[in-house]
Length: 164
Image 1 (cartoon, rainbow, N blue to C red):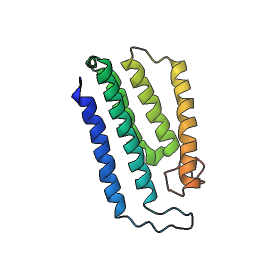
Image 2 (spheres, one colour):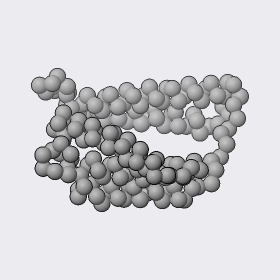
Image 3 (tube, rainbow, N blue to C red):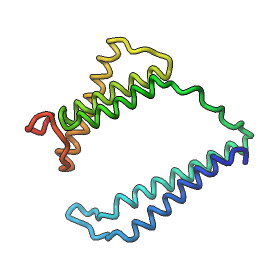
């Protein structure tokens, strides 16, 4: 047992799974027309957390058995990168109702990508920003359509047609 934090994280995830499973017991299981009841998703999440907890404990056991060293402490904080990621989150919160979900999330993606590049020591030339914009649109547009068209949730759109 070299690093107690690894064991603590695994045990904590297992406890969280157990708490979620106890909460799921109180949710009715009557299935709707799709055959899935309201307690389905909490059970899926509790099961996923339990699997992750067991895997984390297995990794902690394997590291202790191999005599692994404790992880090295992280390097200094990249404040410029943190600022870009934070600005992306704030801009998304401010602009999502005005620009719509797709463009608001694209702005967030571009800012976060630039922040992570700065944290790695890289820059952000114009070509990279254009590529990040394309990737942001290609990730947020399908998410928007899945949530609005398939799941019937209301997300802010740029137009009243519901496609952007």
